[in-house]
Picture 1 (cartoon, helix red, strand yellow):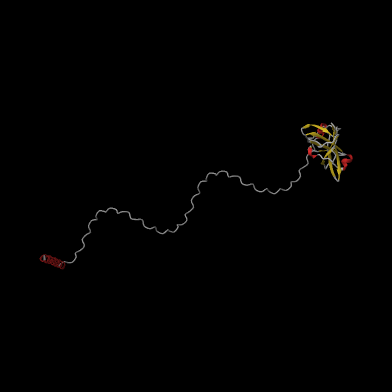
Picture 2 (cartoon, rainbow, N blue to C red; picture 1 turned 180 degrees about the horizontal axis):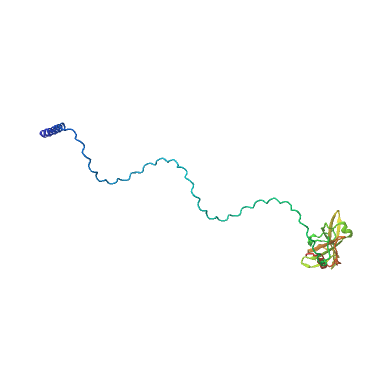
Length: 249
């Protein structure tokens, strides 16, 4: 075993000696020989990763303005705006020249009889519960204020009154009226500067209640000088009065 190790060591020493001697015998380097022909290109390598973005460059100079393009189509009609305030009134114009006088017109037809200043009340309802009595079981009354009643009316005027049953409005009677032991009348007053038209019931026999149904009243006041032209009229005939005064029921 020791002999083999010794032999190996000797071999190594001989190799080292040979290499040393060879190196010592090396001459000077000769000239560079001519370049050989270029070998064929190798295959393209794989794409490398993208490098980082460089800094933004400065803005270039403003370019010249391009030519004007063709006009576009008209847009849709817009909605109407809010009206503006009214303008100031213009100055008054000068009067125009007077026209020539027209021909005289034909004679008009005769007008209806006048009723100027004649007053007619509306139909006023007196309910059964409205009648009053001054402790007299045979006499009852109801009163309505009327500013058209004045002292002049009491002295020289004319007042007419009419009544009807609300259930029979087409039958109108004048006052006063009497039937079956009862009198229905009216009178008017002017007291302390207040006018009233009063209606009263007078019974032949005492009663506990004055009346058990409603009545409607209307009155006409004719002043002393009513004006206009009045035809003769029967004031107790309500239909005739209604037509003359154009009353509406």
